Image (cartoon, helix red, strand yellow):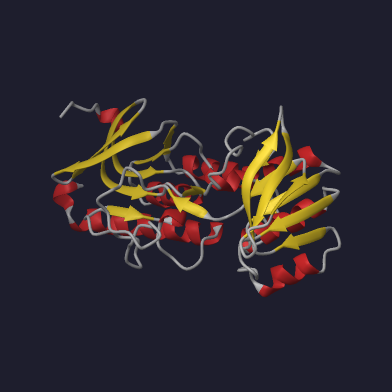
Amino acid sequence: MEKIGSENEFDFASIGAGPAGLAAVLYAARSGLKSLALDSNSGGQALSIASLENYPGIFPPASGIDFVKSMRSQAENFGANFFCADVIALDKIGSTFFIETDKGKFSAKSVLIATGAEHKKLGVPGEKDFSGRGVSYCAACDGALFRDKNIFVIGGGDAACDEAVYLSAIARHVTIVHRRNEFRAQKTLEQRVMQNEKISVMFDSVVKEILGEEKVKSILLENVRTSTRTKAECDAVFVSIGMKPRTEIFSTLQKDSSGYIITDENMRTKIPCLYAAGDVRAKTLRQMVTAASDGAIAAFCAAQDLHENRSSF
């Protein structure tokens, strides 16, 4: 094993610096642990939130960017360290974890996996070609680019309904395309969609292709019951069909049927001193407030575990 300098040795390291990772390194540093957050995009999905209106105590609502900046400054104030890099491998030898990134190697006595989740793709022709040119996965990020335009939203869950309502305040018209014959969203969200005059819904339908030249111009749809295909003009396609946990480099960990890492209520995995928190973890509710809670619990338990095993601390 290549020798790692003391400046790259830590008590606690978070792979990921979204709300879970930020809360974790804050709590870890505050408890006296030499702490590190590794991420190439500090803030994660929180950065795409235009108005954070359901985080207790944050009122009036703040943007996700401002909220993340505040969390990071708070963590740094307690002594947490941050390093911008992509983690490509994690190994454990004895009681020490070795973390390989694209910009160097680190070691830690305890590690938190807080890599979050990423948007699922449709996997249809044109989606990749027009990404950033009419195909988007974030209404708060890109909605303003399509003011007074004709927009399609793909999906039928909470996120899709939320995005459609948000976009309806910007767009000329919004059409939701959902493969089932009813929404999977909460009833309150469903009602907002159905009562909105600027939103129409195409149930029992799927996207077959996204068409255009320099940018999106139309979308090819198919009715799953009749196999009838229709082509509709549009200026943008917002894909909101769910999330996929980022667990590629953690192949040996126990996961549920959807690929989320299984932990106990204290964020512990089956491997001693290895924890998981936030959207990457199998859980009922994935929100910023629950991610921060997960991170705090993980750091607290890491401090306890390391204290109980002083020989590795």
